[in-house]
Length: 479
Image 1 (cartoon, rainbow, N blue to C red):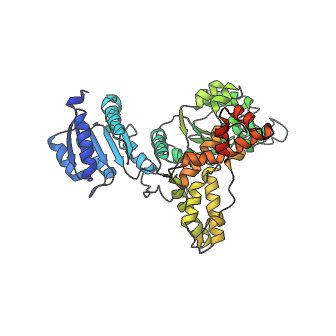
Image 2: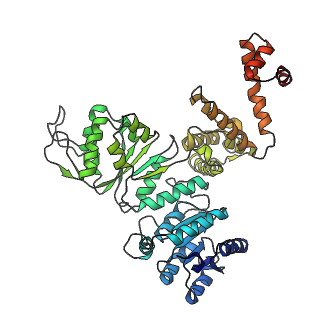
Image 3: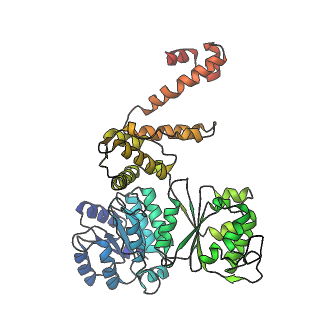
């Protein structure tokens, strides 16, 4: 579509945002109109139909999510961009089902807006038509659509919490892939919530009325893996007194979740690939195949591509499983999500243990400072621990369990990772500190200088030569 001919309608009640967006888009050559409510916007589209709708979620009167189907009735397949200050999984799911093509979380860069508008207007017409066409699975009701959450991401024990940009991307990807049948690989460090993501995908899928069958291969005996997965017939091996259905057959018309997929034994990988390709399985000891239909979601804390390179994981199986990938960020990269999660876990602890404990400011700073190598799981345990010790009082840093240092798991030569972790910890405590570089030097220089001096028996000239600095500089830094 010709950029200059495109008319854009912005529906938002914040005048400053409307002014900024209008000026930005007009400078890009678009024709722009503004409405301060959904009701106002619905009236405006009667007289002039826009080629793009930018819609805020929180509006006076009808909210943005409720207004989507009303705009869809009048605008048909016109692309929509949703903007919100409180993005969560439910918002992303509702936006996806309403045919929203782009989803922006405040605060956003103006460049993000321009890129989103350009993508929306340049989108394939067939995709846009599918967004507004009944029967394509985009606008119809799907189990779980009525669930709701608050600005912090919700309070359900099964829900995924977070307001950080990294988690907004995760929410969007869950919303995109949930309504499809595409196999999904979820990767991330231990404790990041991979199984929660898998359950969210299943809960919002067309198979939600059927169970999700979790398969934890690492917990199975190697000799029983194939029997557990594919089942067996009577007499297949010693002790097989009766026919038994395997997990994959139990998952017929449902979802199978493979936890730690990198641990699938090589011999089982061959049979699993055949099941995925032929949609039928052969029980151990059997001679007749059985039809099966299930969706596959796998999780791993290892790089499956590296496993393929190491020849411990079949390349053809990887491509069969990795139809869509979701990478979960570690907790240390999620900013204020740490506090959102900590408050959620504390509320849960109060209910379970009958306490009324709360975080002190010092405890909050300590939570933000830690690197959480165990991620969300470690944070939850730490909050539970602190709530029990504090009982009905303030949780102070001394109530939290001893910190598990991430550096203990680092290779001894991984200096860059250690420096990055140190910087993250310092910035979490005081993000605006002006002397970070000098304090870094004060931490590392003494250890470096004294190690070199020990090597040359305190000969400063020799030490300065090894360090590549002037002897006077070394003397000054030592002082």
